[in-house]
Image 1 (cartoon, rainbow, N blue to C red):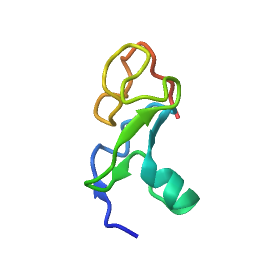
Image 2: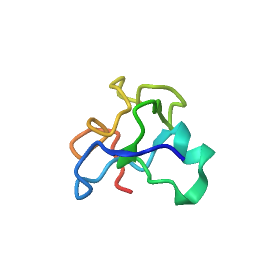
Image 3: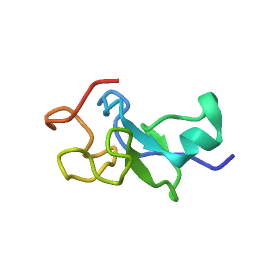
Image 4: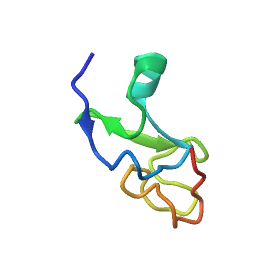
Length: 73
């Protein structure tokens, strides 16, 4: 299993639709979108693409409260 890095404050919620490949590869024990490896590629479950419904990037730093398409985990 890779070494994971903290990319955002764990107290800052990210969108429930944000996903990374590692979440699917390593299963439920994988740190979720709050932590990631350097090689993670993110996508939005709503669009199945690297951008969300609003056209902005799907990354933990941006998939947060205040974004129109945001839904709390």
